[in-house]
Length: 91
Image (cartoon, rainbow, N blue to C red; front, side, top):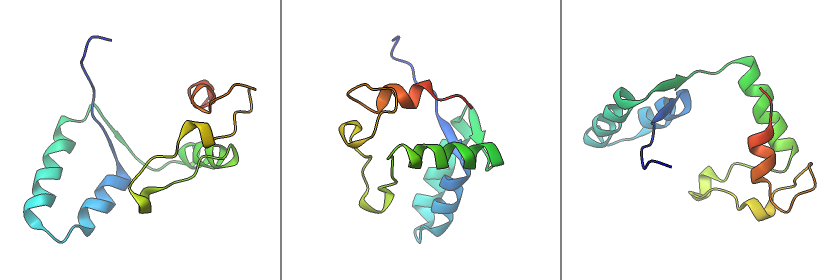
């Protein structure tokens, strides 16, 4: 890794930011969108991918403010972590 990162935006972030009651925070978050190398929109294939991930045991913990541990994910490829299967999915 060279230490660089790319910002990817999502339509979900737009929805969440619109719900933020603080104008200053909404404006600051909107600036991140301008830095994004991609803006992900909802598509049928995205919904299908999300459903496959849920089928593998990956659940949204957004309401808890954390990402599920890979150790708790089912790996259909027989490994000890869900991480490999996430990276192996075909779109």
